[in-house]
Amino acid sequence: MNFQQLRSIREAVRRGFNLTEVAVALHTSQPGVSRQIRELEEELGIEIFVRAGKRLVGLTPPGHTVLPIVERLLLEAENLKRAGESFMQEDRGALTVVTTHVQARYRLPAAVQAFRGDFPRVVVHLHQGSPDNVAQRLLAGDADIGIATEVLPRYEDLVVLPCYQWNYRVLVLPGHPLASGPLTLDRLAAFPLVTYDGVYAGRAHIDQAFEAAGLTPDFTILAMNADVIKTYVELGMGVGIVAEMAYEPARDAALLALDASALFQPNTTHIAVRRGAYLREYAYAFIQTFAPELTREVVRSAQAEV
Image 1 (cartoon, rainbow, N blue to C red):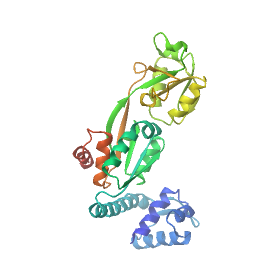
Image 2: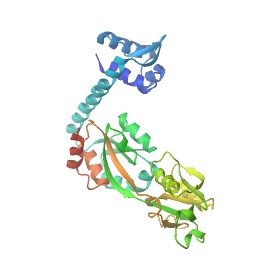
Image 3: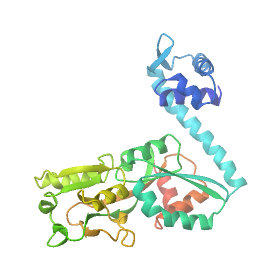
Image 4: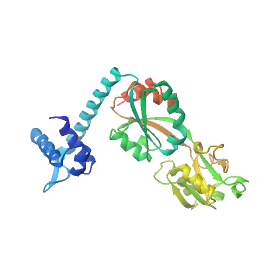
């Protein structure tokens, strides 16, 4: 048994049993991948994959049992490597953070700047995606830390801690009818709306509020990030609904921001790490820089919970 065999098993599942893609991911040949899988099956005395001719099409019952063990072995191998690197180069390395656009654009810059001041020899890799994508990349081992709103607690294999709560702002042009008088869901529903795509978890609170009020809003433009939403509001194409941190008075002087905290439930942003993953000391430092209450001891205690 060797790690290349274990990686072949794991990647075969991750790549939808497409051995061509597995070979590319592992920088080897398709026959080489097939051989690694077959050799491990022969050594274990079981068939891990269901086959249709030469193609893999699924996992056998023994395969479903073996896969989590393979995942744990590879995770611990990676932990061992990181532990060695941590002691050899305590303040040098890489940190991969996967998050959403709102966090990357509006909340993370100050934390990254402060972190880089303390750890100038650590390279920060910042990736963006939807909340579910954040979770999946953490689970796949492609990132050290994930930051997103609402979705992360659904995943049992992640250690998830709350960071802060935030509300929405309604954005309009100066002189818009909503700029005067009370802001209500009824008045808001009377105008075309520009807001986040449904893949973003916080969006659910917007939909729930309108549904509870028996209103059918006119969502005319749905976007993946707040900068796009603000652009279309500036063009007069609708009323915007964005996360409160996405409105920057100095940069967004052409827009008025109306407090919508009374209309929609607050959202909670969480930070997460993969359960069982080894974190280098500077990863704990980054977490505390972003969320000061999440000290190393608090995070380690959460990691230790079963």
